[in-house]
Amino acid sequence: MTVSLLQTPEYIERLAQKVHALSKTKNATSRVLIGISGIPGSGKTTLGAAVTARVNQLENSNDDFAVCIPMDGFHLSRAQLAAMPDPETAFHRRGAPFTFDADAFHRMVLSLREPTTSTIYAPSFDHAIKDPVANDIPISPRSKVVILEGLYLSLNREPWNLAAALLDESWFVDVDRDIARARLVKRHVVSGIAADVATAEHRVDSSDALNADDILENRLPVQELVAV
Image (cartoon, rainbow, N blue to C red; front, side, top):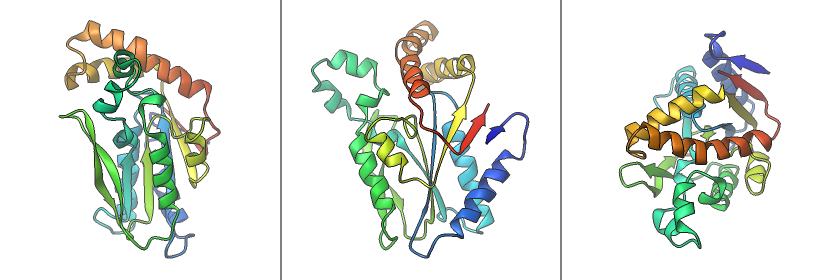
């Protein structure tokens, strides 16, 4: 099914209602796992946060019935990148599949499929130090909906596809490449990744665009195609 964020203002409500209804089909110790993927700059984080907040409203929960976990915490650290055979390329391509700990992500999804008897901790990413922070996001036994968002959640390559097979549904945010590029250029300058617009444009075209090509050319089938 394709949903247009621009043409259907109720898209968040529909998706949240769908996830909330799915949670009611689970037993007391099982979670709903939703994966949101898309190219860099597509709006994955925005969609994940909005659906999570609305599911919590539907459940009359403040913030822990549904949680949204970004894939950013699974970035390899700067020290790990520096130890690679070609650290210059590794740093420039940070955000490509090989710069993530995909096996650790897969292990976390496996743990989320286990009965919900204890708190699971996911890593976060500290943009100030530009490195992941281990065990920073708690996923308590009360969290019956976990929305995962990140670039490679529907990538048809191990171990990403093994993790995707564990999800209840996969969603893909489909955005115009020019819109995504403009967002990324602005983001790189504002965040300090790039010193100016020209540097940001070079980074987007020589790194983010390659990741987008990989994502689009090797995408698994999804249950929701969210068009922006």
